[in-house]
Length: 355
Image (cartoon, rainbow, N blue to C red; front, side):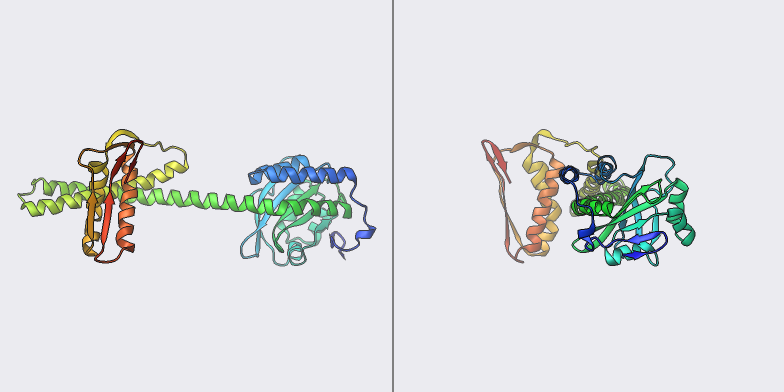
């Protein structure tokens, strides 16, 4: 143990024989905590449970949760809750680790006790976080590292408005809690990060798609004017090419709308546009083939169609099924043998439709 006037680091593996043993009631509480931690889904649920369900073991007035960034150089607060108001050190606060007492906690994995936070703040005036906590009314603090596979991923802070509120037995109990807590906290934190990153991606996708939509719509409109002869007559072959340009432009517009719908799905605002009598050949197969025909011809591949004689209808969202079929045909060209054959069959069975 390293001892300073206001700061202690406690080696949890040293001097165990001299410590007070964990009582049966404390062990029962630890088992309950283990079960509760396993059942919590979100990070805030976990943190709220720590505040509400563990202070019988380790009395405190404030609990905080912070994480170390990927570089290992900064720490940022993710959660803070206390019995008092106002809170000054809250979620979003960041600070450098270099030269501070938390750097020792990361390097050695030893919990930290600050017995007199006011004195500690005077001795370390550059510690902005300590100054904020003193202004909140905190007078002592217990910090336990959250360790996953030998790596410190964050910290669990317990603070008290009384000086010298924590001892070695509290450290022993906190370490037992952190062993159960660390992996659950990191997992919940990673899920939150992925959710936030996915949300940001979808927002960016919606923005870019919206910006692309207007130029493509203008292109389709202008091409339609040309194909319909508003600017002068065209040869039949020219009209046919214009119609293909229009069809591909319309497909891009539909694709842009699909990307916009992804953002709506994320927000729970998208509904399936299902129709009862969709003509599978006319509304799905034929438009999909037209969109990939140029790729098939460029690869010198043959497309063999096996279509039923009569109309085939199905209940579906034709726009979504077209996307699937275009992707399938595109993959057949991309991964097929140049000069080979692509076979597409549509079969109507009594209780299902196969494409």
